[in-house]
Length: 500
Image (cartoon, rainbow, N blue to C red; front, side):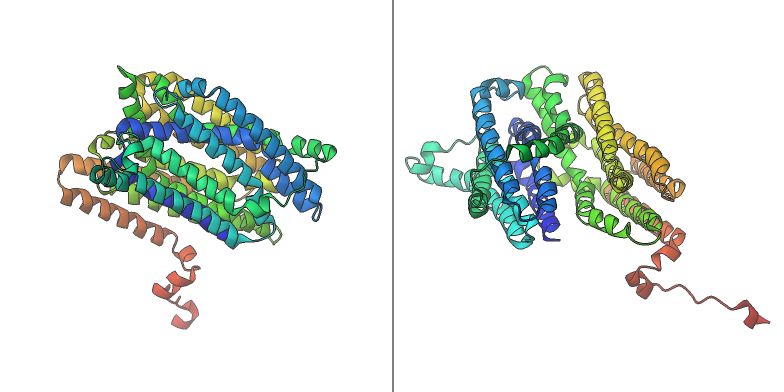
């Protein structure tokens, strides 16, 4: 539980930083941050090359075998030093690819961040293997908190100190227009702290390298690079393509579109955070249920409640989008709010896909997951390359929608042939369709009846109407939840025999 809580808490803290970032940074600065943090996951996949998962598998299989940790750490250490040096040598070319020519030092900061994060990967994995969740969670959160504090100091405290003491130490380095750089520097502080706190775990290795074991680990780990790249393409590649393909008279105008899309993308992360939380607890639950009787019925019920939850979350965001938009501190971001419903549905499909993916994990056909991910990546790339030049970031939102929608459908059809689960797909499809229709109904109402009262009133009414509908349709299922059974018990059934 601690592992999941810390990961979600870390993401949530960064999520809450969005209003502050959009307020403090210019559109170009926020775009630079978005581009940089879209590129970092690609480099993370390259630096770790699936070895974390390989370490887990071999360390679990060969408990007490020190060669696994020693060999994996030596491999990661050598490859990290080599790749870090290589990227530093080509950092100016990389800055050009990322459209960061004006600030190539941002690439240098990112290379160092990735290097320290990579070196911390196996020590973190070691903590998980040794079942030391509290230290794991505390280090994760300490790194994020330090990052936030350093960033706040650099962009909010330093300006006052520089103005108050124009010839002081702070004034010698402070730059008012360097927000994106300060964000990268603050992240570097967090990464260094995490590695420093993991120093004992990291240094517990011996410089011994088992070549035969390493080859085995590579055979297992290297295919995961393909899956990793496929996943990252689906998640972040659109923000790397937008600076090159989006229509615009100049780089600044194009980067403004990147900033708008990245800011509005954050509004769809509410469902994403729920999906992440669900993933943390779902996989152990699914595998445990597989040992019981008739687990397929359990999986079907889990998906039903998952869909009910995410459809309610979808309505909660889209019905109050005129409130949620203030999460983005500057009004020019609001031009991209039309992507939010599309991205919310895309993240909903992603969550459903994760539920459906249990079939290939239980049947040991994980290669199917790789194929499905790569199909999704191909769809993402094709739609973005073809349509961004004409439709800008709207094409990226629809690419994400069709990517995860296709993965969901393919996994369902394929999975039902290999491991049949009685999903109530007609009912669940109807729930998704209903919330989409309610959204359009709300849009029609606010088009003819302008004003805050009509907007919030109709949104609240339609949200409550859907909640009431779900309770009525799923009344018997809801009564199996202890809390609901206490609040609204079903009326006692009359005995027909007693009436005669």
